[in-house]
Length: 257
Image 1: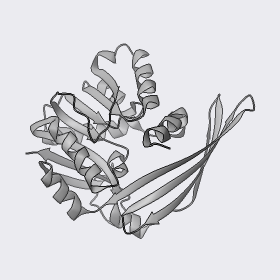
Image 2: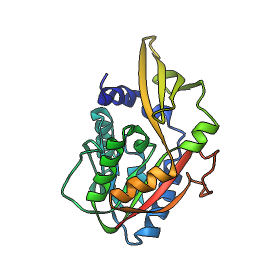
Image 3: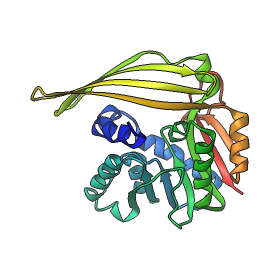
Image 4: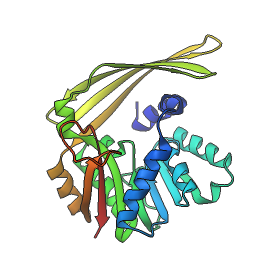
C-alpha cells in the first residue's frame, strides 16, 4: 500500500481515535513558541496538517494557516470542517501536498509540523527535503516548530504492545498496536490491526504499517544547519522540561538564518 493510501484509510477513524487530544492547549503552546522567535507571526504553513485540528485552533487565535497533507481523505475532511466554520474559513486553507516537495511560492512567518510528521521522514534525504521545504517558505528570522520521537527515550522505554478501544454513535474501533524496532536505521515499524464495527453490525478490518524514525540531537542540529536553520530550543513536548531518556515526544524550535 502506498504511503498516501495508509493515511486515506486512517482518516476514516482518525478524529474518533484522537477525540481526547487537547488541540486547544497544544496550539496555545505552539503559538507561544512561535512568538518567542517571531513575535509578530501571523501567517503559518502547517506541514502534515491531518484533518486540521491544530490549524483550526490557531485560526481561533487570529493566525492565518495554510495546511497541506499527503492524504486526500484527510484534506477533504479538513476542507469539510472549514466549510462548517464560516467565521474561521477566511483564515484557513487546506490542500494536498508532500512535505518533502511542496512549493507554493509564498513566504510565511512560521512553519509548523506537528504530531510527529517529521518522524515519518525515515530516510535522511526525506528529512532533509522536509526541512528545506520549511526553510524555503520562511524569510530570515522566521520560526519552525516541530515535534518528533526522541531517540534516547525510545531506546530507554521501548515501544510495546498496546490496545485501544473507542466508540461513538456511529462506530466502534478496536486497534491493536505491535512495534518492530530496526536499530540500524533508528526506525520503528508500528503495525496497526484495526477492527471497525458499525452500529448496524457491519465490520471492516484494516491493517496499517507506520514507519517512525526517532531522532538524536547531533544529527538534528547538523541537518537543520545544512537546511538553513539554527536550533533555538529543544524540550519535552508541552511540559518544557529538558529532554532526557523519558521524553518520548520532543519539541524543537528553529530559526531561519
